[in-house]
Amino acid sequence: MTLGRVVIVGAGGLGREVLDILEAINERAPTYEVLGFLDDKGGDRELLARRGMTVLGRVDQLGLLDAEYIIAIGAAAPRRRIDAFAIEHGRHAASAIHPAATLGSHTVIGPGAIVAAGARLTTNIKLGRHVQIHTNATVGHDANLQDYVTVLPGANVGGSVTLEQDVTIGSGAVLIQGVTVGRLTTVGAGAVVVRDLPEGVTAVGVPARALGAQS
Ligand SMILES: CC(C)(COP(=O)(O)OP(=O)(O)OC[C@H]1O[C@@H](n2cnc3c(N)ncnc32)[C@H](O)[C@@H]1OP(=O)(O)O)[C@@H](O)C(=O)NCCC(=O)NCCS
Image 1 (cartoon, rainbow, N blue to C red):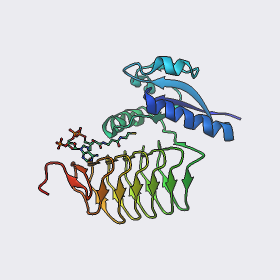
Image 2: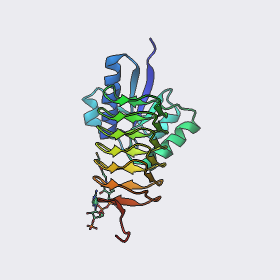
Image 3: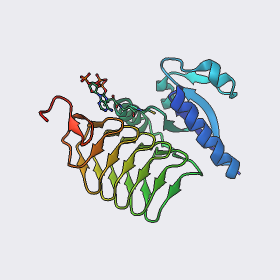
Image 4: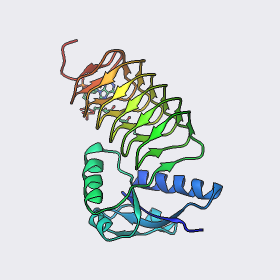
């Protein structure tokens, strides 16, 4: 059986978490051959060596390697940039869906998704390109998470929520059903979002309000 050759872009903590996910997938059924990591800053070489892994080079090596890629970087902007570079060079993204995550019916997962252990996605959910759903986060029915969205550990995204492109939802945040969060907005850890949020703000607290906005 031919294994899918994969490189992980980003050799930090999230990169090692993604390696764990790929190893968990391979334990169920041999699926991926992980060639190594790419990182402009060198990454956690010592910790990777313990896993029998190396940093193969800088991110632009992606253009030369015959492999699919997973971008293990939490920030949306570099994820978007690296994805554009990879597409320009004819590369295809792989996904890392932990076997201990649950995906409900009619859920559509875009290329490059990372879904960590304990994440729960119910029914009729859409994830765009390179969306990340971290450990123990939940996403309710009919939610639409657009490209480069990040949902950090333990956050709860309610049913029919829309997260526009490049949105980040902090750890433990709660978004009630039906709200829309505008593109590039960050919701702080532990916030409770009860109304739509505009583009490009950072919102914190209960109920969540944009930093700098009048309360
Ligand atoms: C919201 C957030 C993005 C703000 O970061 P920032 O722009 O660097 O803002 P600062 O740390 O300068 O804080 C600005 C103000 O907001 C407050 N604040 C920051 N985060 C907050 C939060 N989650 N809830 C409530 N208030 C918060 C700060 O206390 C500060 O208030 P002050 O001006 O009265 O002192 C960040 O604190 C956050 O919550 N990120 C999510 C991270 C996360 O979930 N990580 C999990 C990784 S596994």
